[in-house]
Amino acid sequence: MNATNRKTASFGVPWESAYGYVQAVRVNNTIFVSGQLSHTPQGELVAPAELGADGKPANFDTMEAQMRRTYENAQVLLAELGGSIADVVEETLFVIDVPAAFAASSKVRPAVYGQPVPQVASNLIGVSALAFPEQLIEIAFRAEVQG
Image 1 (cartoon, rainbow, N blue to C red):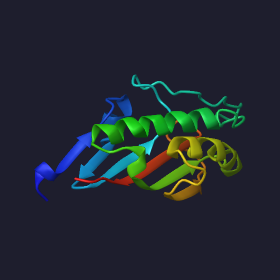
Image 2 (cartoon, rainbow, N blue to C red):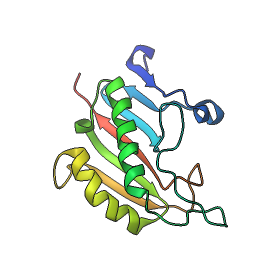
Image 3 (tube, rainbow, N blue to C red):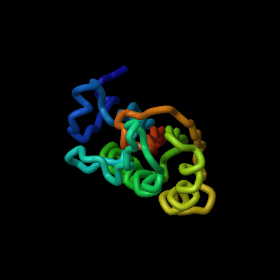
């Protein structure tokens, strides 16, 4: 692959160098966005879940707020690489609680994609843990752009 056909984007948050990855890669007309979470540009978690005595989320009340910010972060990366949310063809949501994600996604996804039934292939996967204990959701994307 010609290096000129490959572009990357990152936020510069600490876990990029700690884990060793970039947030998004564009190869030709495809943009792959690494699993996004709800953080500020400085790397602070937005709407962190309250943790119980066991160190796990005590409730999932912040799922919707985390989901909204996660999509916002993805939109920043897509734009940096010449795409937009309208170019997304597939998304995979990794969540700590599936019912909470269903409830939040019925509000958030139509607003993000601008239509009642987003025209994107979507996977919703329940997991036991994510990168940070207060994190409830992570979303990875694939987008196809023109030119």
